[in-house]
Length: 357
Image 1: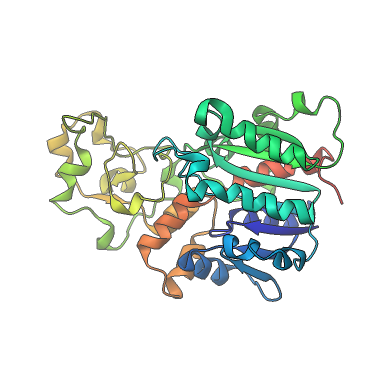
Image 2: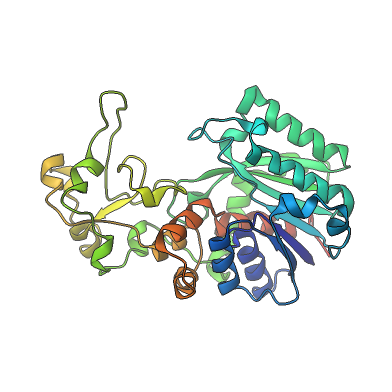
């Protein structure tokens, strides 16, 4: 089955599809990809063999010429995590009124010409609520107008054996008929149950808690300076109150801005004694914030951030080896789709004969 990956980033959809291929579930072949971020493209190209595939580059420029769309190879499945900042509660929620919000319509430009049988799109959970539900209603209306049956649902990364809280809308659409009870059967609980039953025999990476992937000894550059630790641990300010804890067994949602080091209420930080003791020592429970600030505390490495999204650590290392800076790698991890979540959804759809050759 052929596949086109839009807004590819570091290839979360592609990684899931490659694993489904390797596991003998269903063979997939990527025919092309789009990505405007040059650093993300470097990481992507350092981890996948893209020879013979269409490098679409900037999707806006690509779709501006109808001949480019016509010239794409035919494909069965289109995937894409279209830009989400414009719908996120962390952003200004400008939605379709902002350039990034318009990216969904570039997907429509391609779909109306190529009309693949299957579509799987990803976005933030807030997409459902944005503009009192009007944004999502417009998305469904556009897809249905092209003849697709549309099935959205919210999935959380932590339910698929990656220790990260990350709820995302996945929109599955197909031009084919589905069983009458499909809506009732296609639920996060059912997708999770099937994945739970088989994941240990599959090619996905899995971890119970962050302690399973945190390295005991890392370079000194990942440790917080004495100056930064009080800021990271602070419980907010007069205008913004928060509860900043370190040593989270289930990581907070990775963000594209994690490299900016906000606070431990938003990002993920760990004390060295917690890591080395494999959680047996956790002074979050008995130290004041001032005492915690005396500990050696570090942020995630790029490799660990990639692992929290279900990628092998060497994906980050390969990016570093072609000159991608750590700041860019953190951004790429925060923007990525979680491999296990995508795998689990596609695995469910294939095993239930919704997606088929």
